[in-house]
Image (tube, rainbow, N blue to C red):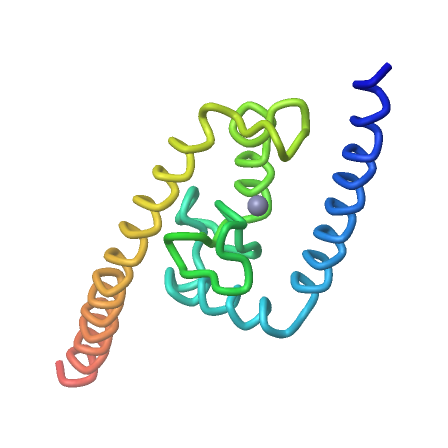
Length: 149
Ligand SMILES: [Zn+2]
C-alpha cells in the first residue's frame, strides 16, 4: 500500500519529464540549428552513408543524446542512408522493448563500429577525389590525343 502511494507520483513525474524531454527533442530536431549540424555531418563523408558507402546519406543518426545541442560528428552523430538508419534502429541493436531506458547490449558495439566506419569514410574521401581527378585528366588526355593524331 505504501509502495503504491509513493510510486505513483514518481511515475507521474517521470512521465511528465519524458514528455517535456521529447517535446524539447522534437523542437530541436525540427530546428535550423540541428539542420546545420546534420548537413555538416553528412558533408564530412562527401554525402555518403557510413554503413553502405555507395549510397547517399539522407539521415544523421544520433548514437547518443548525451550531448544534444552540442553534437560532434563521429562522437555523437554519423550520416546514414534511410535503410541503413532503419537497420541500426532495430530493437536488437538499439533499445530493447522499444524502451529508451533499456539500451540493447549491442548498442555500444554498434556505435563504435559506426564511428570507425565514419573515420574510414572520411579517409577514403580524398582518395576518391584523387582517383576522380586522375580519371578526368586521363580522359582529357585521351581526348586531346585523339585530336592530335
Ligand atoms: Zn537514429
